[in-house]
Image (tube, rainbow, N blue to C red; front, side, top):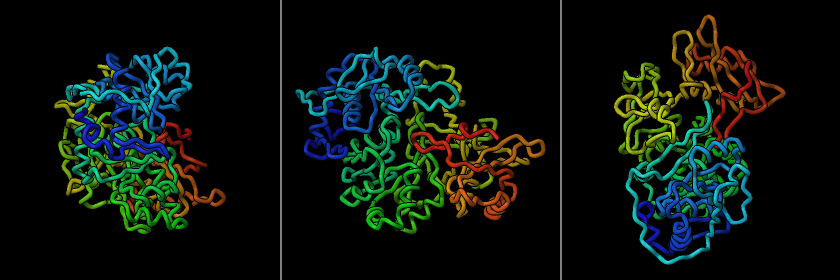
Amino acid sequence: MSLLIPALAHDPDRPALRFGDRSLTYGELASAAGALAARLEGASRAAVWATPTLETAVGVVAALLAGVPAVPLNPKSGGGELAHIVADSAPDVVLAAPGTELPDALGDLRFVGIDVDASGPAREWPEPDASAPAFVVYTSGTTGPPKGAVLPRRAVTSTLDALQDAWEWTGDDVLVHGLPLFHVHGLILGILGPLRRGGSVRHLGRFSTEGVARELGSGATMLFGVPTMYHRIAEALPAEPELVKALSGARLLVSGSAALPVHDHERIAAATGRRVIERYGMTETLMNTSVRADGEARAGTVGVPLPGVSVRLVEDDGVTEIPAGDPEAVGEIQVRGPNLFTEYLNRPDATAGAFAEGGWFRTGDMAVRDPDGYVRIVGRKATDLIKSGGYKIGAGEIENALLEHPGVSEAAVTGEPDDDLGERIVAWIVPADAEQPPAADELASHVADRLAPHKRPRVVRYLEALPRNDMGKIMKRALPRG
C-alpha cells in the first residue's frame, strides 16, 4: 500500500498507534487513512490541525498515501501567523477531528473531518516520485515571517533509514514520547519513524514523568524528549523509584531540538545507568548527526554524521573548511545529502541564499569537531557566537559550565557590544534560590576555572525564568535588553 510505511499492507494486527486509551492497529490505520486519502485526491496541499491526537497521525498518513503535501499547523499559533501560513501555502483543505472549532484564519478552507474509525475498500496507492513534496513545515520565524520548508519524500525516508542504522531501530521497538506533532521531531521522527519500522508509538498526549515511567515500565523501549523534559526527569529521579527503574530498562533515551545540559546528562546516568544520546537536525535538513547506539554517548556532543549525510565546518568566509581536532576551531556547520529540503516555498531568494557552492546548506549553527568526528555544537551563529578579545566563543559551553554551579537553575549566555573587547559575555541566570542568588564574581570564577579566563561572563543578569518556545529552546531574542 505504501513504500513509505510497508507495514500498512503486511502487518494488519500489529499495534501501530496509541494515544491514551485510544489505539489503532496497522490494519485499522490503513483503513482509516485510506478512506481519508480517497477524499484528498486531487488536492494540492492539506493543512493538518496538528494536535497531539490520533486524528493528526491518521491525517498525515492519509496525506502521504494520497501524495498530497501536508502542512502541519501549530494549534498555539496566533491568528496573524496562521493567516500568513495559509496564504503562503494555499492548502485546499484543512484536516482536523470532527467538531473542532478552528480559528477565523482557517475559516475559508474546506473542512475535512478525520474519522479514525472509518473504513473503505483496500486499494493500491501509487507511490509518488522520491522528489515529490511530502511536507511543508514552517520555521519559527525569529527573523521575519515563518518560511515554509518543502521536504521531499526522499528526505523523510533517508532520515528514518539512517536512524534505523544509527539507533539499531527495529519493528520490535516501542517508542514513547509527548512531543508536539507540528514539528519534525514529534511528527516525522516520533510518529513516522516507528511506523516505517513496523513498530509502534505510545504518545503521552501531555508529557509527565509518571507517564514516562508507566510506558517504559510496560513494554516501551525508546524515549524521545527535549531538554526541558529530561531536566524534569533528572529533577524527579531522587523521589520516583519507578521512574529510575523504567529508565534503567529502556533500550534508548534520545534528546533533541536543543542542547541537553551536561549536568542533566550526568544526573540521569548516575541514577539510572543509562546515558541519553543526542542527535542534531533542523526543519530544513531533518537529521544530520547522532550518537550511535553502538557508540560512546559522550555528553555535550551530537555524535557523528548519519549514513549518507556529509557535514563540514567552515570559516567566516563560508568556504574554507576547518579540519577536525582543534577544540578551539569554531566553524559554521554546512550539510549536504538526501535529507535536505528542496526549497523555501515562494521564496527563491531565501532558498538561493541558504546554499553555498556545491549544494552545501548553511545551517547557521556553530560547532567544533573532535578528532574522531564527534560534533559539539556551541550555538547559533546569529545569537550564540561571541567574538570577544580576539576569540570566537560559543555560548553553549559557558552555559553548561554555569549549570554545574549549585546556585544556578537555568542559564543563557549572549554577547553585547564592548568598546574594548568587541563583545563582552553576558550570563542570564535563573537562581536556584531567588533569595540568595550566586554573586557575579563567583560565577565568573566558576566559569574561568572550568574553561578559560577569556570565557568568563563579564556581566550577570538575574531572571525569574528564561523565555522558551514550544520545543523548549531558549528564545534569546526575547531576553530583555540590558
